[in-house]
Length: 585
Image 1 (spheres, rainbow, N blue to C red):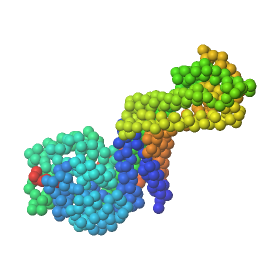
Image 2 (image 1 turned 90 degrees about the vertical axis):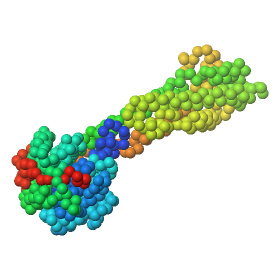
Image 3 (image 1 turned 120 degrees about the vertical axis):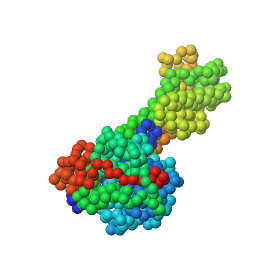
Image 4 (image 1 turned 45 degrees about the horizontal axis):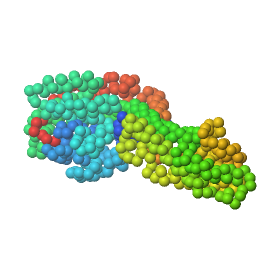
């Protein structure tokens, strides 16, 4: 195999790997289009680019596509002179794609690597999403036809399948009607074909005899405005169908003759398939760039949403630290319990005991009722402090996310986001209880006196000495004792560490949905790297073949991949046939 062709196939495999793994989970503007675009690109790589590169001289695939009721099935039946594709008034008529090929070409299309996403069937009339491969001896070897579902079908699966088949085509035989040729949907599909560089021939169906020339001329002007002036146009007038529901053979003869000429001329067929191949390769770069921009938006939104969470809970942590170190906990119930300790003399007893002064029998060295009340008040205040911090952080997240489109969607999908965890208050109480147990254990390591734990609790929530006012000399004296001060300072930091872990779990709970589907910051770079590798491989192949890919001379291609000189066999002049307005296919 040609080294340049091998490089190109390897580059396409790299593109497929990156695109198949790309995720665009956040609900942003353009995200749905990015998901569909990535899926469509992978499908086109599998259905068209990879198999075409494996066999450049394989038969051309012409997809007969169009809008609902355009008459595609009747046209296909008329071209092969057999009622192989169901036609009727029931919509959608074509539910499963039908592929018709000369018997000599059937092995190419029954291969599992050609349109691999579709199972094969050898009979007609199936309503399952399978590809029905049917022998059509009246077709010339070299060009096969697919009767595709309507690209504007009321059935979403049919619309998707129709576009997948159009993306896998070497040639579009696009069918519209005299009544609908100016509709928006056909023109969107034609612009896609233009951007891909795919060969297009157009059938204008159900033309009234008296206005056929006028309609064709008007349609030709519209095609020229859209850069499709070279597309051959076949006009089919109203006529009476035969007993099998087909247009008389003479009426579709110009279309059949054109297809036969392309099939019988190796040069014309090669020009057609290679032009479409080059167009598809060139279109892949812009498609990858569009995905890269969408990935950048996803990464930026991920960073914004996750950053909001981290900032909100970072502020909450800073508030807890400030209040622990600023003495604000020595208020309310804690202050009341403190004053009771002072007034009862029990604080003085605890200070004397911790300082090693002589005690009397009326001065027991163990927590008293007032001491336990004080420690309980501190525990309740600490639990309330942590819980309040979590509530405020969740509220900040909720407000910020409501104003962000992706954040708004996440909140709607999960009502627990932007709100405190239901079990957070209990977790805060458990945290404080565990912390107080650890404080008592550390206090016993420092001193055998039980009063040290009480004084260490005071030290852990008291501010620096210079910031204390109105708390009395007992507090100052308690904070000067080395043992309680050492335990209190150490346990204050331990408390903050535990709170940090608890709030970090809240951060993870909010951030996890943002990251759940694998938004990765490197995706834009990987997509662009894959695009660059494809461009390099294609340029290398072109250079190694003397500026040509197969028989198509690149000197005739403009920057969009269209032929500057009209390829042989693509006569732009309209050919006029006729057809019945009563055809419902």
